Length: 123
Image 1 (cartoon, helix red, strand yellow):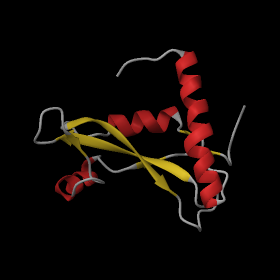
Image 2 (cartoon, one colour):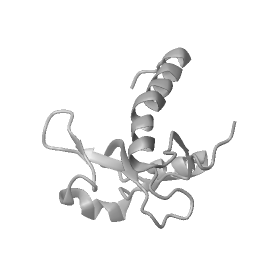
Image 3 (cartoon, rainbow, N blue to C red):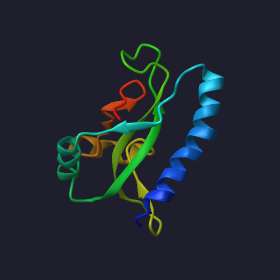
Image 4 (tube, one colour):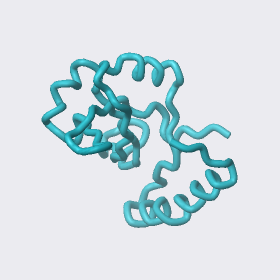
């Protein structure tokens, strides 16, 4: 993982809003998510509870169902621990593979986002 400068990060976010988010908003008639917030204590707890065989985390994008109380039909994320796969630099998780689904019990379960923006945006 390499850090990026703030200018590059802002350009990436603006490009996302102008392209992907704009298409989703129009096609699905929703003011879709542009970011999500996680409390640091929950993120640390999640990482600290990963099993010893964990190799990292993967962030999967998903969509809330129509009955979601805060963000129906909006994009969100699920964060999942990964373990080594069979190939070089291959990492698999319980969402991708039933082979590691049993590890969800030992700490590879998904962590959901906490506050999607919109609707919960702070400036």
